[in-house]
Amino acid sequence: MKMKKILVILGPNLNMVGVREKGIYGEETAQSISEQIKAFANEQGFSVEIYQSNHEGDLIDKIHAARENFDGAVINAGALTHYSYALRDAIACVKIPFVEVHMSNIHAREEFRHTSVIAPVCAGQIAGFGKSSYFLAITALKDLMK
Image (cartoon, rainbow, N blue to C red; front, side, top):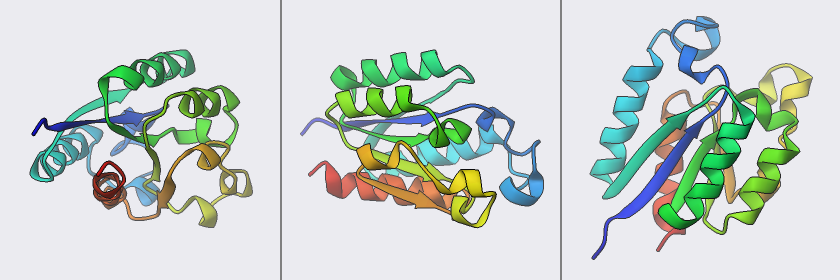
């Protein structure tokens, strides 16, 4: 049986986790969390690629490319979650399951963070569990890709 491939997409400023707003995102570095995501995905039987960009167009290009190269995706679009209809449309046109993730509880933060324009085109949303949000999303994808 062929190993399923998942893509983890990290949007703007997520490369700065461990440096920015430590009270919200903690002190663990983005690199350390990425390594743990890879290890967890492998334990779950997935091949995984992690892609981070601070540029909306690059994220859209990666989402389009996912259509033919991945079986599912986890996306933490950062602040783009709240206003990027272009990301929303990219996810909608790629017919693989996406799980939206946020390390912080976006519903307990500033009001502008309460709305996700990408949520309606994702299979689900996981928020507020720190780095474990990624592990929960991978577990959800496992069931979605059966």
